[in-house]
Image (tube, rainbow, N blue to C red):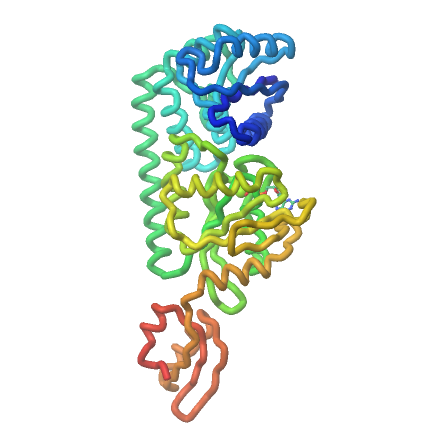
Length: 413
Ligand SMILES: Nc1nc2c(ncn2[C@@H]2O[C@H](COP(=O)(O)OP(=O)(O)OP(=O)(O)O)[C@@H](O)[C@H]2O)c(=O)[nH]1
Ligand SMILES: [Mg+2]
């Protein structure tokens, strides 16, 4: 079992360092590592060989010895030589936040696609740090940063890594191609798409399960929920049909955390593209969290990084059952809910419906009796408000999307 001292260099000297260190602590614990101490140092520039000042490094060495720690985790991304120098001075294994996150992802990845994505990101992290890491791993047996998905041992030979990376990238691109075809078919059907996004552990998957539960009786469609960071690594897509026949596709996505490693975002880009092609985002927030405002900012920043712009957003402040005080949300439109209790999934659906089908118009159509199959089509696929039989045919008052309205414009009365 690892016992770790956490280290954070604070450049900005605002209160955010506390938030980052708290987040690092959660990430560390998510890796089943015990945190025994946490230190920060305000610095204005990086010391090239050690990242932080050498005085601070000696201090850390004392903490490590006194607290019997066997690991030091930096909140900042380190170079290979910094890792080597720090390990030499402190005498225990040194890793950084990026490697920690990659390691969590490696242990969570279940599908072939997720495993490939994580492994590519790991190899890309290792390549520029090869020399420092080789010495580091020579001293260590197993553990953090030395395994790929499925406990596979990582290679530390440059040529082997480079060829492995191309091989994995090729394999991933085949999966991505197949996924694109699936997506295209969905786009052709004109069905609207909703992506559930947000900080990790906010309750995104729980919300999707509530939607499934409320609109279908199919429990086997449910997605994985767990009280841990990055429970969801693979996007799951579900078809939701409302009582009034309006339908949409809902996609659960990987959670965000601040400074998500760049190569990880890069390698998950194909998965994250699902978000970009949505008509609406459901941004789930753990409203009971001390730092929920920062977590919202992290999510907004990450969305920007993956190129998401101008998609309408509904903010869902979740976990109201755990909120001590009434919170005052700064983002609109929003609702405050408790998805664990299912309170109030109906309001969530109403909000989704209002946003997603805003451009639907109520029209009346006159359908001749000879075209009875059209009447059945509308009854199965649209929201009928009124239906009457006249001498000339069936008069249906219903809501139509702009596309359907165009397609059936000749019937409008
Ligand atoms: N108390 C409380 N817990 C909740 C609520 N909603 C979800 N949870 C719990 O929060 C934890 C995380 O829920 P998930 O739905 O897995 O969260 P997520 O956003 O999908 O998380 P990742 O996939 O890890 O990014 C689980 O233990 C849920 O049971 C809520 O309204 N109240
Ligand atoms: Mg999830």
